[in-house]
Amino acid sequence: MNEQAITKEERESGARFAPKFDDRGLITAVVVDAQSSEVLVVAFMNEEALAKTRATGNVHFWSRSRGQLWLKGETSGNFLVVEEIRVDCDQDALVILAKPAGPTCHTGETSCFYRRLDMQAPDGAALSRISR
Image (cartoon, rainbow, N blue to C red):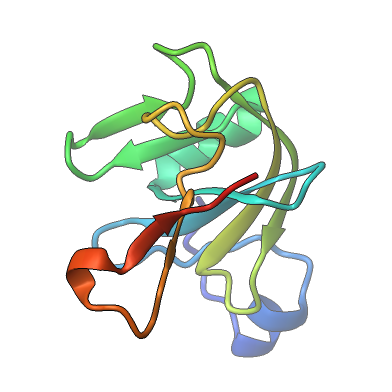
């Protein structure tokens, strides 16, 4: 991405896309089902993942654990096809509206967010499955 100087006003109100990556070169990406509005996955993109996502229309991430670029669906066939990318006010987070081609989570669940936290329960029994 182009690292030219940008004012706070330009970043927050202008038309110029100037993503602000963190000190590890990453930006948070929240992927939402474009039809149902369900949050599917929260992951990270580096500059290359973002560029490939924009170029191909398929969501790419940067895997922090593997230290490599990751095309979502490359092994499972469950690609996330971009319909829209939204950028937050200071351009350090993205919301990607996508059409999933199958389950998003590696567990086979529709979304990575398939459990809810009971705020009063002890940690050992605090999670329960969300019924759909």
